[in-house]
Every structure is written in C-alpha cells, then in structure tokens.
Image (cartoon, rainbow, N blue to C red; front, side, top):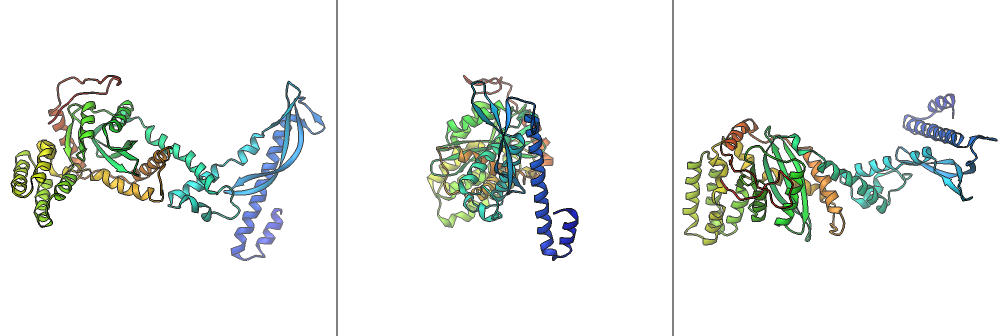
Length: 421
C-alpha cells in the first residue's frame, strides 16, 4: 500500500479502525526495510547477482523467517548465504541484520514489564497480543533469568567507597523453610538510605553474616569514625559486626526487644510495658534513659524472671543512642530496625507471586535483588536527618584510638576484635 492508497483508505474507515490500518502499513514498511537491509548484506558478502566478487561466499536461495516488531512476530523471506570451508565443506552464514531483527530484547522488555507489574509467570502470555511470540512459561522464565542477573549486578556493582556512611542496619528476611537472607541497609551522613547487599543462607547465622560483611568491606564500605549500627538482637550478627568494626556503637532494636518481652508476659501487663517503652523511645540523654530502664527492671522483677532476663541481656545496647546524647528527632529511625523492616514489607509484596524458592538454583538471589532494587526507588531521607551532624560529632568524640586488627584471610580494611560502648 503506497502513501496515496493509505490516505484514501484512512478516509474511508472509522477512527477506531484507522489506527490499525496505519499500524499495519507501518509493519509492512518495516518488513520491507528489513528485507532491503538483508539484501544489501548479501551483496556485500557475495557481490551482485550474476557477478560474484567473493569465491568463498555464495547465495543459497531463501527461506521463511520471522522478526520481531513492537513485540510481535512478523514473517519475512530471509536470503541465505553459505561459506566454502577449507576442507571442501560448506556452512551457513548467519546474517547479522537478520539476527538483529529477531533479537529478543523487545520481547524481554515486555516480559519484565509484566512481571514488575505483578503478573505471574504463568499469566504473562495473557497480557500480550495473540500474535506475540515466545510467551510460553519456559520462555518467560528464560527471559526473566537473563534480566534477573542484571538486577544482581546493579545492586552489587556500586562502589561503596564513594559515599560517606554513618549508619548500618542488618536484619534477616525469611524466604522459605531452607532460605533466609541477611540484608544490609546503609545510611549516609546526609540521611539517604541505600540497600547495600544481602547474603543467602539456611539461617541468620554467623557464617552468612560474615560473607555479607566481607563483600561490603571489599566493595569499599568503611567509616572514618565509629560506625553506628542497629541490630535486631541476633548474637551472630553482633559478633560478626564487631569482627569488622571493633569499636562500633550497637543499638538494640527497641521494637524487637519489646516484642520479645511481651511474649513472656500476661496480656494484662502489656499496656504498662508499652507505656514504658514509648517513654524510652522519646527520652533524651543517658541518665533519663537509664531511669526508665530501672523502672522497667522494677516493673518486670516481680512479674517474670525470663522477661527480666531478656531486658538485662541487652545491656547498654538498649540505650546506646541516648548514651551519645543526640537530639531525640533521630530516635524514630535509629532506635529500631523499622527502616529495613519496612523495606522487607514492600519486598514481600514484590515476591508474593513466587510460590516456591528453589535452593538449588540462584532463583532467590535474582528475585531478591530485583525486589530490593525496586523498593529502594521509594526511599526517602530518614526523619531528623538535619541533626545527623550531631550524631557524627558524638561518634568522632568516642572514636577508639586502638588500631584496627585484621582477621586472617581478610584484605586490609576489614577489622577484627571486640568492643562495646
């Protein structure tokens, strides 16, 4: 259909049909363009018809082919070229123009867009035109696998030494019965949050955390003052963190601690426990915070020995931030791991359509990298970021003058030792 016929046809159809007529015309032009380009490549390889210029390449007829345009299959007739080998045999020559025209990148983009929007692997095909190729479950999985590795590279490819880090949060997210991931979230001195990395394992244990910390340090994560870390209470995470940052200030998550103590008490005591922890989260200064801890001890002592033991187990980690005597505007984000827990909540929304994580493959790594990368796009600065310089000053004043020690097998920059506030 030439331009004159196209205009005449468009004038005879309804506005609803005009769009399809125009798109059909464009597809025809694209097919013709691809055919012309392939013919030019054949001429460059073999010379003009009936006047061959290369004795090693010769035309070998044509065959039906398919290219992809706007995510849909378009039929073309592709020319074929063969090469004369030194041993007297011949072999097919792949035309670069044809390979480019049937490149699956457009198809892959459609698959990724559907999956990111929440469509399951089985139902991706239902979102596409009937003429769209390659949307079987196996093809969708292959495309997603290829793109998933890009998310992993994107997450772990950043040079962490380019930012000035002040705060590190570590917490675990349970994916399946056999797989748990420890995730690291960093906060810069300007209050910006970033997902740093994660490590998969069977549980939230020391070896998994050690692998995560090794990779963070090798990528340039460091702090020229005492690192402020917020943990959920895992002894394994605390031990390993102090291996790499021996003078780190460790704040115990008050939300986790309150939850653990509440589980040991009768429901009639939950209200008073919540009131005391609310006061602890808002009070500023070491002495006032210690007074509330003493009230908690007096409250729990006659009620439950295990609850009291759980409180005392935290020690000074329970009020580490108050000991630094920084403004309580920072308490909302730095007295708990809520910043990373909220990320997990959104991450689970992204992973909700995965019904089974296969531990024998890297499926969980690809999906978790994708989910964390997407979640990070919605990050905002932490509350009270304007007062972060006061936290930085406090961490500098308490900087341990002892030189860093390096555990065997670790590169320079990875420290070992034990420390506390």
